[in-house]
Length: 256
Image (cartoon, rainbow, N blue to C red; front, side):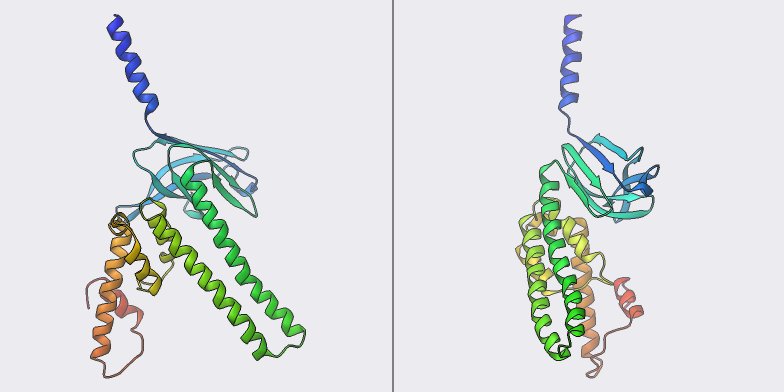
């Protein structure tokens, strides 16, 4: 009997030490109340549901076992709330307001949202240039002078944004943040494309990053597309126009 009780205690201890994630959420957005929220992740070439819960009186909670650290996104039904979350051991806090969204409480989430805050600051500076342009026009300043001044500032902000994103991905290429942010900056592109920024990231990132399912597929498709487009350019007698969407899609589908 004593041996049986001891075995139960050992099993209970092992269970309590198993890794789990807990997300405690709150929202002041009235439209979220009573809605169903989902955690979704890109897995096996598809977006899959990981967990779900309901928002009740501005509160919601996700919890479950954690086999591996995973980056997910928060959805309301099928609509993305544009909130990446790292599922990692510990208690994660999510706060959704009309003017801000924040995830905190665990190391990788703290690091991710510090980066997002910096990126938002750069976006705000870029948006402010548009307001300044309007004001300068109202003040009667010459359009060429406005363009000359603001273009320099816009180029500087773009360089800062490029450096911020590149350094963050490279420094986090050995954890889920690197591939996760890479997906965020490339998912909105019309088709996989190689840019100097992406080439630099691939030259500096870890093997784990390069072997990530999304990253490796993107990079392979971008290289294949570039090679075939260059081949088309070489046989088009100097035609420098870009291929049509249908041609690009055929290349991606292996039909060209």
